[in-house]
Length: 255
Figure 1 (cartoon, rainbow, N blue to C red):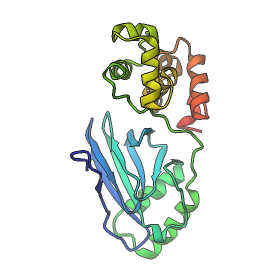
Figure 2: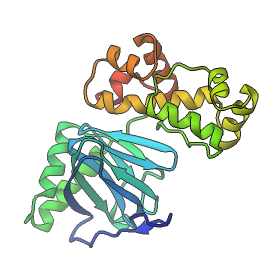
Figure 3: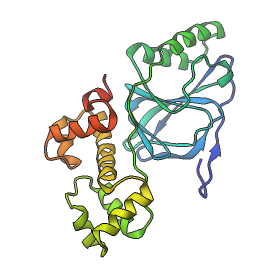
Figure 4: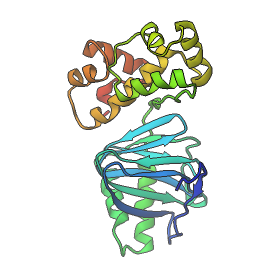
């Protein structure tokens, strides 16, 4: 857990085979603070949607997706609406697969059944090893780019960032935001580049797309999502999503 800005180590107890399964029901708005595991972790929600934040990257995970988190990577995990979460911990020295960075995984019907089978108590070690070997073979990363944006710290830029985070559909231009924060457009633009590493326009796109992911995971139509996150048309939202993420919104959770 996170306390006073520190990252805490959370280790799962060793099991007889490579994988150890933990399960829990997370209430709405619950978050594990910044922590890391010595084992690799597969974060998955059997019900609901969980969010994993790794640095500036934000991964939204309905039951059709899981996230591989390599051991030693600090991260935060939580849920907005509540979820039934599975934490699957993998001993690195027993793991036949290797993902050097966090990777979104496709959870097919068979993968889900294997998760449930391996999470059941009382299965003897030999049966577990066979099921784990099949599961390792089925772990398939989804080739997408994570979405996220580091917030600025300067009070003027942070005021703008907070406004857009609260309402991604806010239509104000950089010039209008500059006037609202008593600064010049040039200064505000420079602050975003200096403090976030990207332009104001790119930062706003990331915030809009990040806000759209829980809506996608909940199954809302593209036309409704587009307007709620600031796009005039569904086609504009789809084009921005594809450019930033590498796949269309419709394939992000189901393809």
